Length: 359
Image (tube, rainbow, N blue to C red; front, side, top):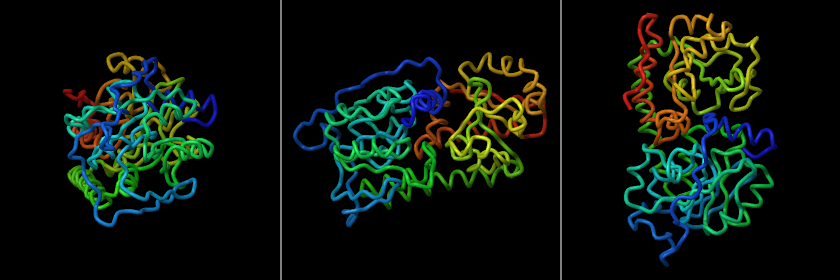
């Protein structure tokens, strides 16, 4: 989210599910204080590292990082990295503001993992890079920047504060799969076996849904937003990845259309990309979205619109936020709500309404 001024502003909006006009929440809590035990005053029953887990060296796009011992004060620069940390039994000292919807950037799908521990300090993301001074004050001993768009310069600056684990080189900015995000976090926290178990659990759930819905494997899907025309999320974006994890196929040529990035605006000449078995729309207002979308005759004339094969997701709802996060913790929350909608959208009957989730 930090490469150029224009790219920073765009991604600050779009990687945040395009929550236009959402106000930043600012800091939440004061978990940077330390009560002398090195854990920042957090719950004392946090999960411990597995035997022989340290030292560990993790390869990433900027080289490699060696973590000598179990980290206790974890800062998440990656916008959704806190979920894997929480799932593995640790509470970070700091998170980075993203959607501006939840205290400390901890969604309801992760509340159980927080328990009665003190909330992390949330640092705002101004779109120009990590706030080095504020991060330094939190005294982290590990910085995770997996779901992020870190530059070499920012990586080097952060490395002066604490060991930094960035995303693998083969993934675009904000394109790391949730499985890799979880497994790498498990390595960094000294809990690789626990991380594998978490990934297996969610993958089993996805496989079960795929097996139960053979129709998904015959369907194509796309995720989009009516931002400055039509913005489509590429195959490496977590939202699109969830569709493919459930068996759907993304349109041929989608990656080329978004320039190999996590997403991009498409020209009106490429609205054919939107005409799939199902179109998932992330919108500011679900109540007015369909009328507004169909008001454009170019899109409204497509079969996906005329046959009601659309799923409308409110950007600022918990469901929309969980869908955007696409993490080991948020995915089960999303699957519970998305699968019934997909069933209705691809059942072949235009009369079937695609209902909004109950909550």
